[in-house]
Structures are given as C-alpha cells and as structure tokens.
Length: 203
Image (tube, rainbow, N blue to C red):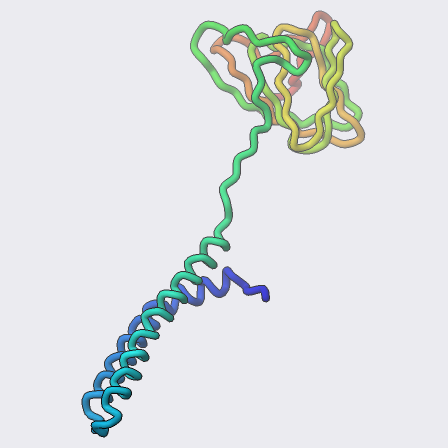
C-alpha cells in the first residue's frame, strides 16, 4: 500500500501536541476511574492489571506514531545534489595546463549565446577557462591539429590556452556559460590575424 508521505507527515506534525495532551487526559481519566470504582475483592487484582495494561499501551502507541511520522518526513525532504561537470588538468584536445598567469587574479563568467549554423572566429585564450553548454550543441575545432569535439546541453569542456580554435553550432542556438581564470589587464580572447573578435557585444 502506498501512503502520501508528505501529506501524512505534515498532518502528524501539526497534531503532535494535541495527541500528547489527549494521551495525558486519557491516562488521568483511567486512573480516576480506577480509584473511584468499587471493585469486588475477587476481581480486584485482575481489574488492576487490565488498567495498568491500558496505561502501558498509550506510550508505546505514541512512540510508534512519532517514529513513523519522523521517517515519513525524512523521506519527503528533497536532497541536495552536486554533479561534477568537468575536472581536468588538460584542455579538451589533450594539452596539459602549465600554470596560471602571474598578476592580480580576476575571475570572469560569460553567458554566450550563439545563433544556429554559426562559426565563431578563430581565436585563442591566454588564460585557462572552462565552458558549460546550457542548451543546444557546440562543436569545438582546433585549427592546427584539425581535431574536433562536440558537446551538447548538460556537458562541459576545458578550453585550450594559446591554441587557435573556434566553436560551431548546429541546427539550434547554443547558450554557453564560460568561466575564465584570468588576470587584470589580460584579455579573455585574442582573435587570429585577420579574424573578428570572438565577442561582438559584451554587456
């Protein structure tokens, strides 16, 4: 049998104080009834045992209900999850990262929107950076080696440093989040000779 755990846990939690008072009142009433009622001598011991059994049942029942409510509440709570998109010591085409540039560190995050069937200008990055594709897909091409690597929504990749490359979209617009571990005064992207800047407009 399936129980609506979230609804049940909330209902039990809101009525927990009421149940506590109710149990206390019932215990008191049973004791008073036992004290005031004339019990035949031959049945006195049996009646006393029955009353005490009733008194023992309520705390156990209360504990069982409280335990079930706690378990139901725990099962209904959402989990905090973390997923590693990338964790690399080398860029996507296999070139190891050597070191971060010297100077005052400056972190930058860009959200880049690239229309369908668009090839970015050939360019290089003088600082390490990593990208995550939010929507669409993007094919990364290395100009020197001719290697390529396609990434789709929900995937990340480590970009190359001081190596000419570009990104090319497919049939859909691509939205990419790029993080740069740069230094003040150093550009994030440098176009190859004769190429346009990678970012035509930065807000």
